[in-house]
Image (cartoon, rainbow, N blue to C red; front, top):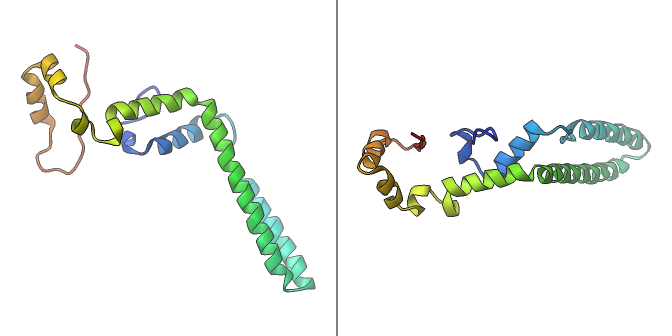
Length: 149
């Protein structure tokens, strides 16, 4: 978790969201086309104004052209992000592997994994730790970290 900058709070978010955040913060490339999109909209506003002076009905045509152009650039931005994700495939794999350990079969760990291997390893103190750190009535998750001793 630490190697890829995840915390106990962020790990509960969907894997794709974690990957997207990692890419946006660790990429050396510009992934957002927000500035070019703003410039494009500005150009279309000027074109709409010019064409509207000639014929008001042309304004709707310009609006449709703008919507198509914006949509194409937004699709391109998604492809850029997808390509950058491929460049960071090792991190993607780590995120998915970590989530599979913590949330096997996209479920809570305690609902899938059996406690017997933990009990065999730690003995009675396994239950003592569970009782100590389990909130009785709080509706929140508790993460227990195994420390090598």
